[in-house]
Image (cartoon, rainbow, N blue to C red; front, side, top):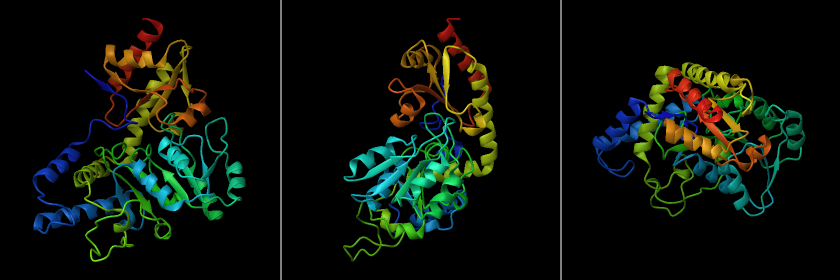
Length: 381
């Protein structure tokens, strides 16, 4: 029987509510939202709007019409960076950014970026950040929690500093949305990027952005086309969400996300956080004293999301991960996790790590069987 510990890539299993709403999308709604004219499609359009409202409420964001749906968080980040930055601009990033951030920054000609120093605990040096903000960069981009280590950043303090120096703040919540409380009003992020298929428990192929009205005016559309609004004009509409949502939407993905949000509302984010913390702590406690393994990131599991990265000192990480799957049916993620800068910081480049990531569906039995498998592979017992 398979043990799934790669929830940092995509959560599995999905709640029944996700399956129910996606199936309804296939069966009940004939046509295309914003295009077809029927009672069923009007109901679908209402559900799409309700999903925006739920997302806005989930992040404590005031503007439901400024919830923008994209196919994933990578597309959302590309939309912002390509629509806002220009040659000569300067951006601040952390050591822990995903390639969803770093590759667009490299691809846009003439962009310069500075990596903000971090302390030995994997947390941004706020004094160094304040000094860098005084140089008036065009944007600061922060990964709320590392997808390599799970380390959580003090984004409220970061947001306070960004607001103090009037620097737009883009927050990447790929690993935190649905895993820990995320309040955009407290964080003071100008843009929040989220993905639907991880902690929000929806399907793959859906993500999005929360953009403040002030920032929305300053970002150019990334993709232009049909919006079913102002169709007599060739210019892209400026109203939101239409400005950033051209073409037929992924309504099945939106409905699946709606189902995921319903599940989180029922279970509560606090309960989900408690279960995930319990499971990852159980795994860490069982293996942290092994001389053959080095743990990556914060030693206090409360300062991480439900991720534990390990580096096998005397064995090849890829071989260990392969054996975990082929011999014991345990699914992990091994390698650089699309975040090479983070591995440079943690001293695990180029070999990478084995990443274990739990969800609220992970059981204690699965953790215990994973520990037994690791011990057998590493110690031969």
